[in-house]
Every structure is written in structure tokens, then in C-alpha cells.
Image 1 (tube, rainbow, N blue to C red):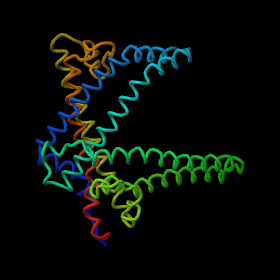
Image 2 (image 1 turned 180 degrees about the vertical axis):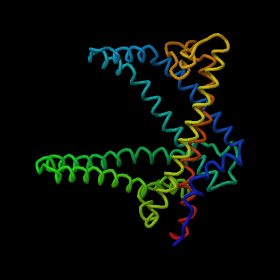
Image 3 (image 1 turned 90 degrees about the vertical axis):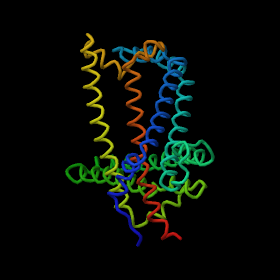
Image 4 (image 1 turned 30 degrees about the vertical axis):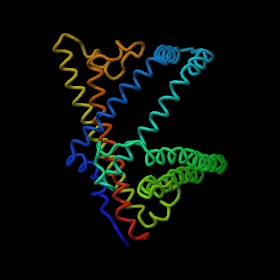
Length: 301
């Protein structure tokens, strides 16, 4: 059986960005530009409505009609942000796949917007509906088992409910891992592959789960450490120029009512810092599947 190292796969994203800092810089610049652009769109299409919705939600006795009205007003904004997020996810995922599977295509930091990216975006939409159906079935089974366990009562009933809950979570995790190579296959073979991953990952569940878990844990630790450092530096900078910590905290939740109130120096600095973390996140969480595909695919040939 062809194998691969879960630890090597999990750390591939860090290796890639360490050895190609220019690529990380280009990815971060793209993330920063998109963050600035989407923030401007958010302010233009719904800044006042966002504030009104937040105020209505904070009311101890909110007016449901008012909240629904504000949500309807925000529908165009949500549509734009959803489309932008889907395309960005596809572009960044494809860039990481390209860096690992097609390293010679390094122009523009592996960034493109073409057929490969559109296929990945389409696959995300297809998987959205597939996962909706899977989750519906699992929740339905759990909902049926719950009253049965309650009817049995006692320790056995509680044990049955616990078993059904754990089994449901385990089943969803198992399916997610078995289907996890679909984007890598779709990119590498230039076609939308929905279920080929299931056969390709047979016998590799635990290795893949280990790689994904380690990668996610590593990027979470790096992100948390980075956020703590940024918060500390920004807090010191604000206090040194006569401000207070509340002003430093405003960088994480800026006022969206106008461009001037939103794009403060501290907020722009935070968006730039977050762009680097986001670019690194995409590299770390996407690379393991690409490495797994490289290691496993000879068996399929």
C-alpha cells in the first residue's frame, strides 16, 4: 500500500510558505485587497443596516418585524459577500494545489482565476447540498433515537442517546475525511470529481485524519499566538500616544457606518496582519490533501 507521512503532510503548508516567502506575500496582498474591498462594499451597501440590526438584537425586547426588515435590506450585501468568499476560497485553494501539484506554474504566486478555480467553486456548491442532505439524515436518525432513549429511561436510555450522538459525529467525520480529496482530484485531473475521493482514500482514514488534525492544531496555535502579539503591540502603541485600551480594541470591531470611521490606521494594520494569517491558513489546511493525493494516486493508476 502506498503511504505518506501525516506529519509531513500537515506541515507542508508551513514548508511551502517558508521556502517561498514571495508567494506568501502575494497571497497576503490578495487577501488584504479583498478584505479592503469587501469592507468598502459592506459599508456602501449595508453599514447603517448592520448597525441597526446589531442595535435591534441588543434590545431586551427586540422587534421581530424591524429585524426582518433590516435582514431584507442586507440581502444584497450577503449575496455579494457570499460570492466573493466562494471565489476567494476557490482561488486560494487552487493556488496551494498548483504550488504542490504543478510547481512550475509559479507565475503570480500560483494565483489564477480560470477553469480550475471555477471547478473548485462549483464543487463547493455541490458539496453544500450533499452535506445538507447528509446532515439532515443524520439529525433525523438522532431525533428518532432520542425519544426512544428517553422512553427506555434509566442508564440504558442515557447510554443509547450518548451512543447515537457519538456515532452521528463519528459518521460525519468519517464521511468528511473520505471525501476530503475531492478538491485535489478535481484540480489535478481538471474535472469536477464528487465521489472519486471515496475509493482513493480507502485504507487511509487514520493517516488523513492525523494529518488534518495536526495541521489544524498547528495553524490555530500560530493564529492565537499571532493575535496575542498583535493585540499587545497595538495596545502599547495606542497607550503610548495617549489613547486607551478601548481604542485598541476598536480595531477588531470597527464602526461600519462610514469609510472614515471604519478604515482607521489601527484597523488597516489589523487587516494587513489578518491577511498574512489568512494566507498562511489556506496554505496549511489545503496542503495536506494535495500531499495525500500525490502519495496515494500511484495506487489508483
